[in-house]
Length: 157
Image 1 (tube, helix red, strand yellow):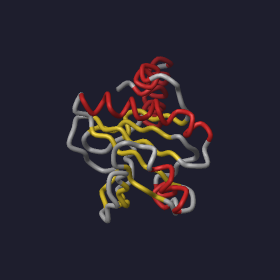
Image 2: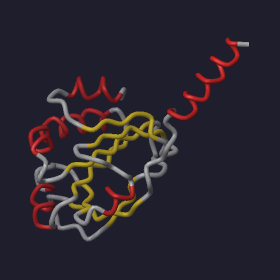
Image 3: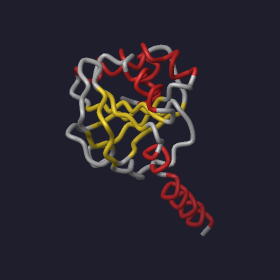
């Protein structure tokens, strides 16, 4: 009987603490350093690859600024493997968001007003989430590493 209670308790804990929450779906503006792009793109929800990476950074964040080159290398590496990536720059005034977005050599999404940040119930930056093709969070992490290998190990991607 004790074994049954313990097993039931463990199963309840696994159920309660298992991932499975989804990143919210949102439409954000696209910033492309090569051209002023007046367009938008979706973030969250389903994606076209088996796994997807969502990165949220902010201009005022010292860690974000420090690891920007590592984020760029990480994105370049995993895109070559067919993994979809969305980098979001937000939570600051539009001019600072624009200036920080220009540091990325690929299009990024902008969320200056922080609405997506709030909707996703994020508590800090930098934030990294690996989702499956249905948009369910498989692994996420707040903070930074200075090597692509360390990021990949932490995020299991």
